[in-house]
Amino acid sequence: MSETRFWDRIAVKYAARPISDMESYQRKLDETRACLTPDSEVLEIGCGSGTTAIAHAPFVGHIRATDISKRMLEIAADRARQAGVENVAFEQVEVGALTADDGRYDCVMAHSLLHLLPDMDAAIAEAYRWLRPGGVFVSSTICLGDMSALFRLVIPGMRWVGLAPFVRFVREDALVGSLERAGFAIETRWRPSRNKAVFVIARKPG
Ligand SMILES: C[S@@+](CC[C@H](N)C(=O)[O-])C[C@H]1O[C@@H](n2cnc3c(N)ncnc32)[C@H](O)[C@@H]1O
Image (cartoon, rainbow, N blue to C red; front, side):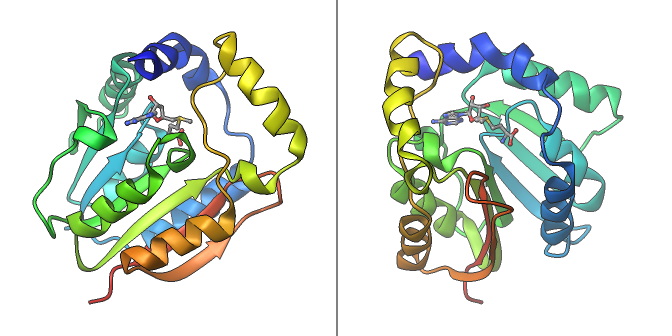
C-alpha cells in the first residue's frame, strides 16, 4: 500500500519535528485528560511516533496505539521504552482493518488522521461502535477544505511527486456533521486559527 510506504519513508523526519504550537498541544492534552481515569481503556488510531499515547499513558489503564506504518511504530515503541511506559501496546493495523468489540473503549483518539482516510465517515462510525456509552472520541483534524484554495492546487502536485500523502479536503462543518450523524454529541470544539487543526471531543451518549 503506497500510504504505508509514504509514512514509513518520512517517519524519522516526522518524529524529529518539534511540536509547532506547544500551548495548543498542551491544552488538547489537558482537555483529553479531564475525560480519562486511571482505569481508562484507550484506543488510538494513527498514533504515529507515539507522542500523545506516551503523554497520556501515566493517567490511564491501557492504550492500544495503532498505525499503518511499521517505522512509525518502531520509533514509538523505542520512545515508550525510554520513557519507562509499559501500558501502551503498539500495533500495525490500518484503520479499515482494525477490529474491536463493541463498547470496548472509554476513549478513542485520532490526531491528524481523519483527513488522511479515504472514508472518514466509516472510521467515525467505527469509533462510535468501539466506545462504551458515555465514552469519548477525541480528534484533531486538519480541515484543508476551509483553508486557502492554494492548498487545493499545490497538494495534488506534491502527492504526484511523493511529497504528500493521500489527503481529503475536509471542511469543519462536514466533520461535525459526520460526528453528529454517527450519534456523537460535541462537547468541545476549537481551533487555534483557520490554518490549524480542529480539536473536537465528541461523546457517545450514556
Ligand atoms: C500526520 S501523522 C499523525 C501522527 C500522530 N497521530 C500525531 O498526531 O503526531 C498521520 C499518521 O497516520 C497514519 N495513517 C495514515 N493513514 C492511516 C490508515 N489508513 N490507518 C492507520 N494509520 C494511518 C500514518 O502512518 C501516520 O503515522
